[in-house]
Image (cartoon, rainbow, N blue to C red; front, top):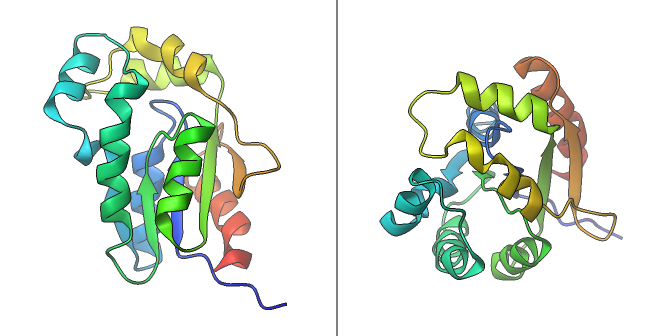
Length: 170
């Protein structure tokens, strides 16, 4: 049976897991398109997060809809940074893709994420929202098209792990 190559990859995980960094690095390395889902948050969502208020499903659905509309426009490989914390969000994005899509779950514990957030400047997500991110997270299981990548390593080691996981899919 011939496998249809995957061209849409969503790097997912909690805040400060490196979604934007790794998606941009992969897009650059593979001459692909990079889409940052944060660019599709309406101002009200960014305002809530900046004020330390966790987003609800009602906040997230219009954002996911805007992202889903944009993610299928580019041709070729596409790397998207998107939290996609809940399975229903991933199922929605998969259904809207209309083509094979693969999630890359950037796995880290709370201590590593807290350290990364403390070192980060200029991001709208405050440190105290970590707990809400982990509470909302539904880790992809074996029924989803997803790779689990341990990010407790150097950036280049993480990129190598991601490439090892996705190269057979492309």
